[in-house]
Length: 286
Image (cartoon, rainbow, N blue to C red):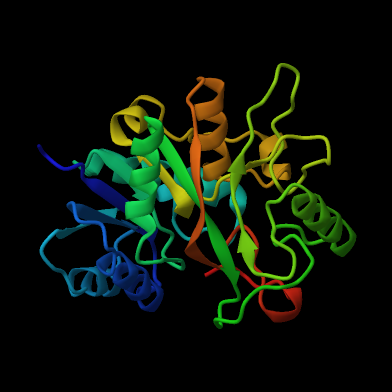
């Protein structure tokens, strides 16, 4: 009987050191099937291509490197502009899923890492429940490797609102108080329930939070229901990212979503969705 295969899609640009760390965590997976790591490089970048092609490989791991040129309108744009970045990320994630030939698609942002049992535990969970979509939780870290323990929601700049949402997420069991554990969750929505991202969630709302790096989706399903590549102004104001768009698309189409309940991704702060360094000082995204 043929074993299922997993494609890991990583979108990257100009961060070869972080990419090498992410790729090392894919190399270290204890999943015993074939892993295809698809590295999609946003715009031509010889240094990143060199880092990706030089990454260690092994039996059961195949690396595919793809450079995706930017259209002229997207060149020389200011860094960190979510209105430009999020649609492009959706497009590049979808490109990676199309390039892969695997049965399942996972994602790994170039600044995050997998724990060694991440892919295996996701696929085991999906198989156990007969599901086409599964996700894990994560642990939260500053970019320098210190655990993120602040009682403030990481995607919200206003300190009062960040504290409010943190408490809401603790009450709902998403953030584990006193730790750096965050257990992503996709609560079912009843008729009339709003879809609100974690950046604007209210206490009465269902949780809608599955980070890009914790997803596992059957590839044929993802090709049929790709990540939407257009964003409304209201979505931008709610800090709606590609992972939120994917979650909403799956829920709107009645796709069951299961969770391992395990924090198997090391999520590092400082990206375009949060831009946090020590002391919650905002910095420009790389």
